[in-house]
Length: 232
Image (cartoon, rainbow, N blue to C red; front, top):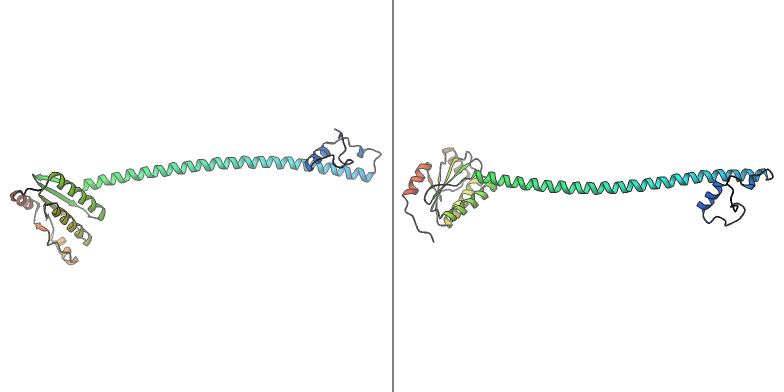
């Protein structure tokens, strides 16, 4: 193909470097390369043509690379959006799992502090294992709700299943006893073993404010003989 207007002879024929290279690189019948042309001119023009073709190929590769980069950026953006979606789903799943776990733990805590009605107006709360702060709170709330609901006049907390007494456990029992009395009910402790009693003394915790019985049977028998007091 021959240029309609020689870009080497007419200044300004090409409006931009890209246009110049396109025209020069595509010119295969340049009159400046004819037999009558100076060898120096022919050599320079030939090199310009070769350089133009090489630059045009590099430009094509550069444009292809730019397109590939744009595709990669778009793909990266899509992947980031997918990762963000997956992260949100994971957080939601984790929150649901945590909520379900909390519900199960609450159910287990409720089952670990059963409140038993043994007589009219008499409830028994057997404790087994360790009485930590969370379990003590669950126990206290459940017991106070039940005393209020059933108008219980007598509460017995059986400690037979408590194998170790700590200062924290003793303080929990004192707070429970105080709260029960505020509702107008009596409270007693039963099943306090000798080793546990010695631990209480060594800790310097005063449980004398709570009446104790040697056995659950004795406490229930006493409660059954106690006169029923009307509650407001």
